[in-house]
Amino acid sequence: MNRPEQIRKEILLQIYACRPLALTAERMGRDARKQAYDFTPLEIAREIQFLIDEGLALELCVKGTTERRWRISSEGVRQYEQTSPI
Image (cartoon, rainbow, N blue to C red; front, top):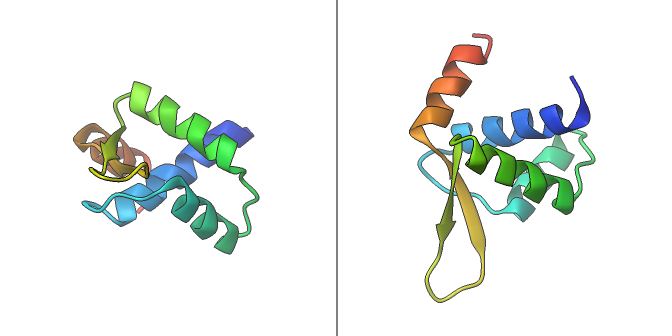
């Protein structure tokens, strides 16, 4: 598995685990570092956009702030549950 795939897998794991809440890229990066990954904020943002384009994640805009948050879509839940080992 290459690095972008690892990043996407980690993002899906995190947003699946906290559904229906939405996470910021900073939070995802911090949680990834706890798991000994060294993903940069740019890499996380790039792969989140890929997941959005694939329909696996959704971006939420919080009114009154510039903070961007993401959550898993219903298609992302199905994808995660069908491909993750139980």
